[in-house]
Image (tube, rainbow, N blue to C red; front, side):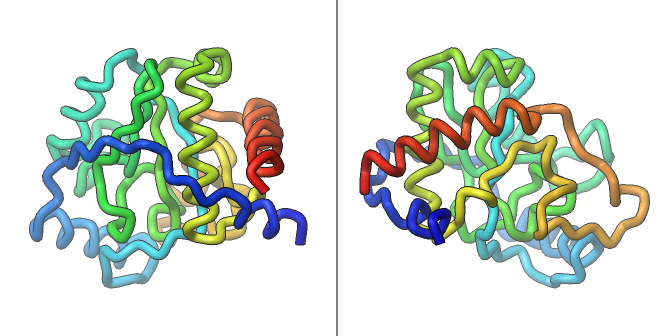
Length: 203
């Protein structure tokens, strides 16, 4: 009950810059085919239940935007649509939204059907946790999304925690245990503590 109470505490939407990547009919069709193969869902429509935190593994918003906009097969897994995230938070704290929140986006194997993806420009969890402007924007954005979609604190996770999410689902056996190293549990525990403190302040 406490987690649910925290999830509905914050009502203030942070400033978000709309910077969309191309996501037209062709890419939506690719997303629907992906969702059918991996989740048994013939749709590109997202119903958010989870928030996944990432970092970009580079130091450039522009490079990240260009990579997501390209819609080329991802270099790691080689499948369309190309990777993307709903939000990218730059190092100065600017929040960019790239994809509408009712559209699935490829950022976390096993969770794309249910998860909003937030990327942080940087190369480590620690870098983001020690950047006051970026961390503040991240917490405010995440808290607002929790409020909007009634997502409890336990379902705000790091990419590295994807396999432990109760929403994890992957029908394609070779990818069933695939995850990434960004935002490990120890760092996400620190992040969630800060997030919970912000939510308590806004009650």
